[in-house]
Image 1 (tube, rainbow, N blue to C red):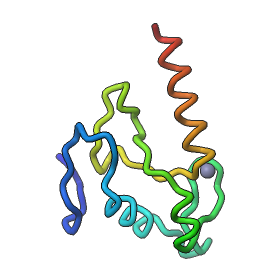
Image 2: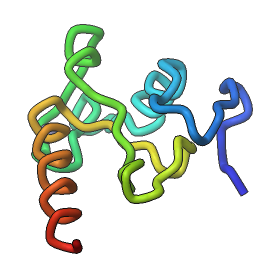
Image 3: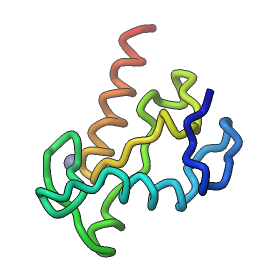
Amino acid sequence: MSKLPRNLPTRDPQARTFPSAWKNSYFRRNYDENRGGYVCPDCDKVFCGPADFRRLEAEHIKPQADGGLTVWENLILLCKPCSLAKRKKDRARRRQSF
Ligand SMILES: [Zn+2]
């Protein structure tokens, strides 16, 4: 079952992208009070404020190419460099598994 927070709009799990309201909510829910911002889970950099928020990408934890769905549980926010690195890594891993 989806653990989508109640105040958020539902999304077709097959949709390509996450709604911006989800990205917003994820950012606020995972805001680290001690460090004063959202900490990118991959590079540990702190992001705070609207300008930094725009530097974060809503990513699928399990890539769509691997059957990952556009559901709340599969959402993660990564900074742009980490998002690119993840996509590259996921692609490389898929190539290897062929
Ligand atoms: Zn990062």
